Length: 252
Image (cartoon, rainbow, N blue to C red; front, side, top):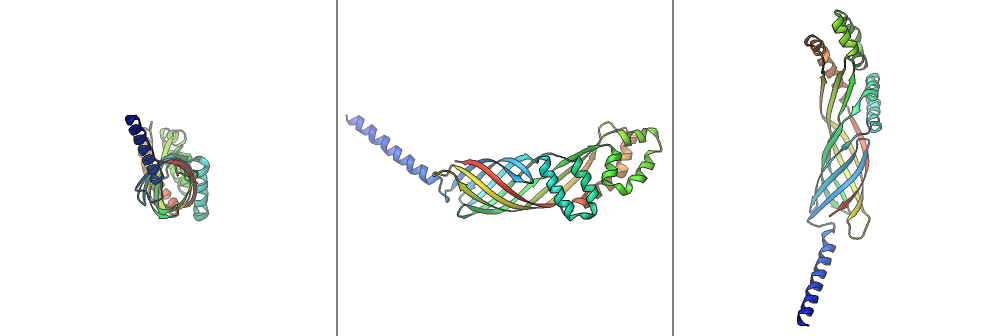
């Protein structure tokens, strides 16, 4: 009987301790918290992410992809700013395929489940087309002269009109962000986050890749590559966009 009483007392004490611990782990000012979520930040990405919180400091990473419709919205937004490159941006809008995206966030919880901070992510895409169509789409002012150069040999003309070139556009965007967390249960383990951000272009890299070009054909590509890359840099100089997002996740 004495042992039974001791066992019941020990279990009761352990239960009371764990309940108290459970109530304190998920308070807003807890020292450590982990969050896993899925969500969408229109118009930049659909993503899954992880966030680590120590006291009020929050560090997050995410990975996802940009749907074609999302990418088109960003390009259309850029067209409204870069009116002098509307035709070139129309070509990019039609031909560009978005790539896998990733990024991170650094925020500070200011109370009332509101966090402010900064965020950065890649915003990449590729265009695969013939050199002729790519020049006509991105470098229309050079199209006639480059076509004349290609006419000097049947090999060059065939490559210019029929072979495939891949234009790679790798950019990094960053900006301020603010978010509000809404807890869906009493012990704060399931949440929805609403967030807004404004993104600016902070880094860009462009390149042209070829696969089955001969040495002479590759030399022809290299002649217009600097002008092509320079034009893309001019077009994307003012790349920016607001974003609005929702995330659903668990906290532990």
